[in-house]
Length: 283
Image (cartoon, rainbow, N blue to C red; front, side, top):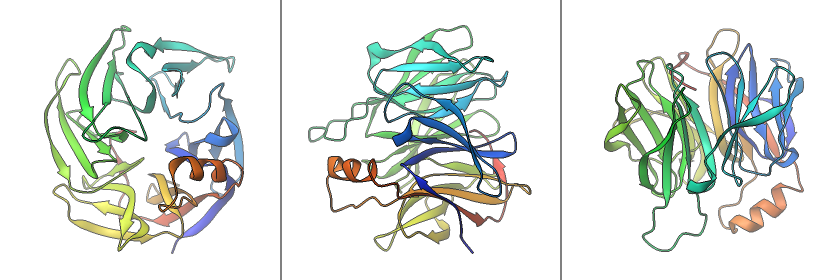
C-alpha cells in the first residue's frame, strides 16, 4: 500500500536516502530537505539557484549540489556555507549528479526542453578527485537520472526524450564506453536494487507510475501514481521502502505552463511504498 508521507513540496526532485533520512531537492523553495520516517522535514541547505538542482555526497560526507542553470557544482562546508567545487559552465547547464565508490563525480546536462528535430545536446562530465574535468559521453536526448552499479563498472542514465535507459561500461579511469540500451523505457530520478533491477518514474497504460524494470526491459512491478513521478529511491529502517517524489504535471500542457502552475501551487508529495528488496549501488 502506498502512503503519503509529506505534501506541500514545490516540485520535489533528486530523492536520496542518507544518514537515516530521505533527502531531496525542493526546487521551488530553493532548499535541500531531509525528511524522517514521520514526515517531519528539516532544511539542510538553501541553494542560491533556481531549478534544476540535484544532490549527492563526497566520500567524506560533504554535500554536493548541482547549480543547474549556472553550470556550477557546489559543495557544502562544515559551516553550512556552499562554495564552488567545480565551475563547468563552459560545457552548459547541469541536471543530475551521481558519485561513484571511488569518489568520481558524474554530472549530466545540456538539457534543452525544446531541441530542434534530431538534436541530442546532452552530455555527461566526469570530475575526478584531483579536480580534473572531462566530457565522457555526449549525444544524449535529455539526460536525466543516473545510477551506478555496486561494482562501479556500469552507469545507467535515463534519456527522457528518447524514452530509453542507456548503459555504459565504466573503466578504471572513470571513462565511459560500450554505449547500449539497458531497457527501452523512459525514466527520471532512479535507483538500483539488490537484484540489479531499476526503479524509475514512468508511465503504464498512459497513466503515471513508478516501475521496477529488469535489464532488457521486463516490467517486474508497477506502482500506480495519482500524479507524475519525478524521482525515487530506496531506504527506510529496513531498507525496503520505495520513496517516490510526485507533482501534478500535465502531459498535455507545455513545459512552461506546467512550471508556472507547479511553482505557484505546491502539489508535490513524498510517497512511501513497500519494496521487495533493498537499495544497491549509487546514489
